[in-house]
Figure (cartoon, rainbow, N blue to C red):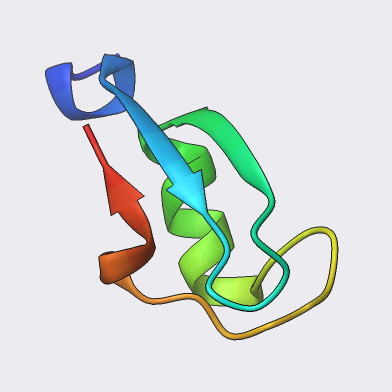
Length: 49
């Protein structure tokens, strides 16, 4: 795993407010597919370290 994959992020959906701690690969998946709860479009702005 690269350092980027090991880093943790906090995701907060801009639509439903769901908060999740995710790793790099899950972050990429959320940006590609949207929120796992409400399917809202997700951008990089939805993540913090």
